[in-house]
Length: 146
Image (cartoon, rainbow, N blue to C red; front, side, top):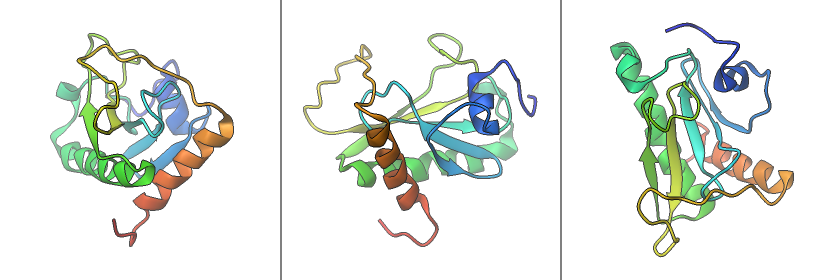
């Protein structure tokens, strides 16, 4: 574990050195929109420190990290009008960025996802991405009830 790895794209987003639509910014955890989402709202939840895989996550970070994943999953479904969410992570194999990250993906019945072959798409515009990020941030604020 290290506080940051300048070669890591996610560490750069966390540090503010690379653009990212951050929806949750806490002392130990950051969440931001995936720039190639399965569906609008697809969010990545990462530990602030550079931790490569789930097995490397220190025990004292389990509750804050998975608490954030849980809150993002609840806020995301409400923010984008989804029926629920799919939460998943890769460890090493298929891990496109070697920094622990959980995908929180909005899901609805008959949304077209089948198995683990998912066509990705870009947001239609910067405005769409900004609006989705704002909706998720709004629902993650303390005191906002779902």
